[in-house]
Length: 89
Picture (tube, one colour):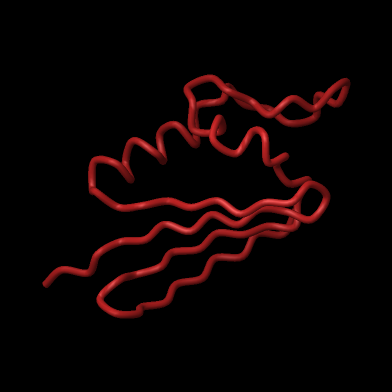
């Protein structure tokens, strides 16, 4: 799918947004996607490679920097990940 990357600053915060128009994530799995080795079940479709580590690494980095990450997703429409970082001088 096509991926969009966007940044904006507001009130001393930097918003780093990554969005796509992919298959989306069912709401019941949103909190689990950051768990080590978790992969969203796709039934008999096995065309997505991976080990379920990528988002776990992202969450670790976000936590170490005391940033925040939010996910918005809708099955069949895509996902949007927003990392919120405090801007410091």
